[in-house]
Length: 93
Image (cartoon, rainbow, N blue to C red):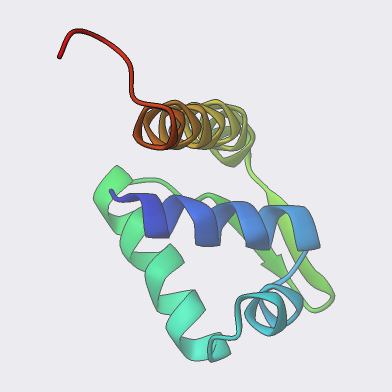
């Protein structure tokens, strides 16, 4: 599992389908689908029920969505903190 897969999973979950998410990600739908499928294979669970009209999260997908939001929020906070340290150095010289 990696951050790219989690970001793509989040995009699909929030947009309700692979087509909409692939447009937003500027990525071919087949590539986006492959990333999610690899994530499902690694986790050994189905994250979405695929329908003719899009996707619906499974119970496991709902859990991963909640955790993914937390993880990605933490990554953003880490990036902001480290960027701030770079832009405003402090400490002993």
